[in-house]
Amino acid sequence: MKIGITCYPTYGGSGVVATELGMELAARGHEIHFISYAPPIRLTDTNERIQFHEVEISSYPLFDHAPYALSLAVKMMQVAEAEGLDLLHVHYAIPHSVSALLARMMAAPKPLPFITTLHGTDITLVGNDRSFLPITKFSIEQSDGVTAISHYLKQRTIEEFDVKRPIEVIPNFVNCDLYRRTPDAALRAEWAPDGEPILMHLSNFRPVKRITDVIEMFATVREKMRAKLVLIGDGPDRGAAEYLVRKKKLARDVHFLGKQDRVYRHLSQADLFLLPSDMESFGLAALEAMACEVPVVATNVGGLPEVVEHGIDGYLFTPREVEIGARYALEILSQADRGRAMGQTARVNAKKKYCANDVIPIYEAYYRQVIGAMAATHA
Image 1 (cartoon, rainbow, N blue to C red):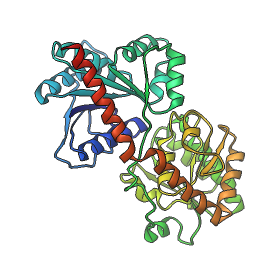
Image 2: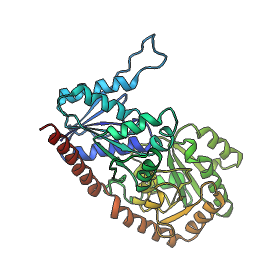
Image 3: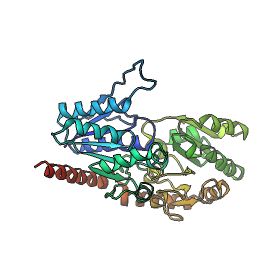
Image 4: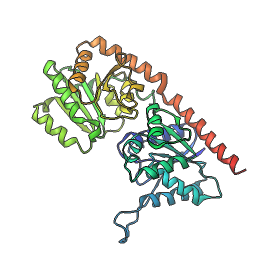
C-alpha cells in the first residue's frame, strides 16, 4: 500500500507514534509519505520506502496567521495524485482531519479515503474548546475510518461529541526488539557514579505532565536514600523544574538531558520511571519504560490503568498526591529484588499486548477494510 501520514513533527506522543508507525509499515514493504511542515523528530529511518513532503507555508500581508490547514490540504492532494496514494492517515483531529477531508474532496472522483487517529488532547482539550467542538465533531464523522489509542479515549470521544460512528481502538505500541533491557555500564556510571538507583522521566515538559511533581517526588525519595534523577525532554515547564531543583539543592543529583533520539538506550539504565501527569490518554512513555524492564509509578488517569497494572508492574496514584507517589517509589527502590521482579513483569505485559509486531498488522487490516469500503462505493 501507498500511505500518506500526517502528524505534528514535534516532541509529543502523537508525532512519535505516527512516525514509528510509518517506519514499521515501511519495514513491512509499504510505501510511506510523511506530509508535514517539518520532518518528524523521531524519523531516523533511511528506508528508501519513506519519503518526506514539506508543506510550504506562504506568508501574505492579508493574513495575520498563515493558513496551514489549507496549505496542508493542497499538499495532501498533490502528493496523492503524484504518488498514487491509497490512503491518508492523519494523527490528531485538528486541523489534520479537516485538511484530509478537503484533499479527499479535491481529489474526487478518484477515491482518497482518510483515517483519523485520535490521540488525546485533540479531544480532551482542543475539541472541548467551544469554538473547535463543532469542527472536531464534523471531521470525526466525515472520516472514512477513526481509531483511538485507548478504550478510555474512545469512550471519552463518544460522550463528549455524541459520536454515533464506529471507533476502532488500536493501542500505541513499541518495537520490542529495540525497547529492551540493554545495560550500559559507562552510561549508567555517568549519571550514578557510585551505583545509586536511577529514577527517570520522559515527556515534552508541558504543564499537564507535572514535571515539578517529578522533582517533588524525587526530593522525598532523596531524603530517605541516595538516588539520581534523569529527565529527558524539554518544553515550557523546564525553567520551573530547574528552579525547583536549585531551590531544593538537588543540582548534583538531577540530570537534564534535553530532547534525545533513541531513548531506549537511556530508559534501559533506569530503575524506576515516574509519570505523574494530570492526564494521559494512553501513556506511551510508560509503555516504553516497561518494555525496557522498568517499573512505573504513574497517576491513575485516562488510559494509564490500561497500560500499568497497579501492584504488578508498577503503581498508580491520584494526580498531585506526590507523597503517595514518592512512597510507592521508595517501596520499589528500597527492595532491589522487588523492583527487578516488577520490571521483568512489566516487560512481559508490554510484550503481551503492545509489541509493534502485533499492533501493526491490526493497522494494515484496518487500512484494507477502509480502502475496500470506499472502493465498493465507487464501483
